Length: 337
Image (cartoon, rainbow, N blue to C red; front, side, top):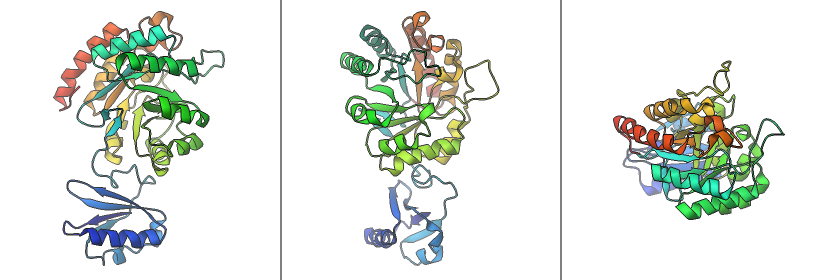
């Protein structure tokens, strides 16, 4: 339920109503926007009489929320959210680019790629230390050592680091060492992991599940936010369809859809969407054109020898050229890069 206040509503009006609702067991999400002040009421609001709420002098209108997600709902938070990742704002006018290899392979490799992508304009460094693979025989990542190498690359370049968490028992290490914790597509509905991440205040990059609907995706964000952590960034990375030519099918329509439904920032991963390096560039441009707040792009200095996903990785020189081309598209849609 949404309670919208009149411009003349006083602090006392709001405090009194908040106390009344909390006394009945409801949680209140207060939002003070440029044009509106409102309460998002979380709980079973079927017992609340909308007409009685309108008796309060400061209340302008009361609306029931149809969607099952509340804290992630734009109706609860009309202004776009901006998530701060170690000083890098995601969700504002500037489109941020997260770049790096699919997997951390050595300290030399991750540091060299970090230096290259920073020089081209990337503002965050990605790299997998723990790798969820379809086959148990595939490279599973360097794990703890990979995290150490990522930290060394951050030390060398100043780029905040982004990497995927696999299980709740690693949360303490990730909170201490990682700037943006990624929840991969396979863990999008690992609700116990999401609930534990909700107890932290670390920014979370939540990838869309392989076959998840938009509502299911946002509901997973709601799990994190319900625990108190509202620093959530959504990532569209392609969904599974009947098409086999590409690794997945990039759902570009999800970006404007999510922005209509939610206030959370949305980034796009064109690398995993296509699985083909030569498709990354046009898909990245399309993502910027439809309103993405950021891009997640795989870059490798020797993709032919990559231990993971070399076929979808750009060489540093191609990435540099793409970054230049993206700036022109960003300007057309009123964004910066």
